[in-house]
Amino acid sequence: MTDKTPMDDSKIAEIRKEFDFFDHDKNGQIDLPEFIELLTILSPKTKASHVQEGFSLIDENNDGFIDFEEFLEWWQEAWWEY
Image (cartoon, rainbow, N blue to C red; front, side):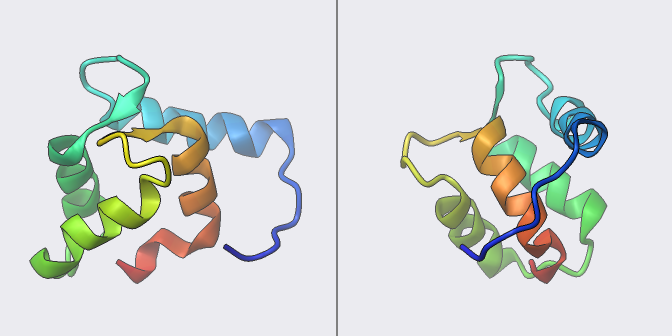
């Protein structure tokens, strides 16, 4: 990932609201179905072939979920590329 300018607390809180919105079961993680919904809403032109690949790239610890730290890093990177 690239170097990023540190974000202030208000920006992190804003991103946390996005994360929490898509974390439907409120387990602190986004699973693949939640990620599919997220991309469908935020980036409707996302190619289906990119969904699993994107999920795997974001899920850096390969546990099958995207936690907030992984999500935050992805969000800063330009999620709209998906």
